Length: 103
View (tube, rainbow, N blue to C red):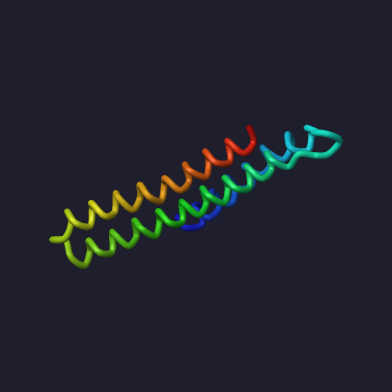
């Protein structure tokens, strides 16, 4: 399972870089090559990959905490959902900022 997650992480980061590299090299602005789209692809790939790692660690820690103390489920669940929302918001903010940078 871990190998599949590592493979999918590298696959999606590579696809993000490849999908945005072609338009970046094809569009010339003022006689030069624009690397904005390539920067967006790499930035979003990094943000999504690191967000996935953070969410995995948070979920693993919550599962371990529940295994040690099942009675603390309500408190752990609230903080888990709050933490996952904050982690995901970082990726969404990155997406918005990178989108605004290119347009």
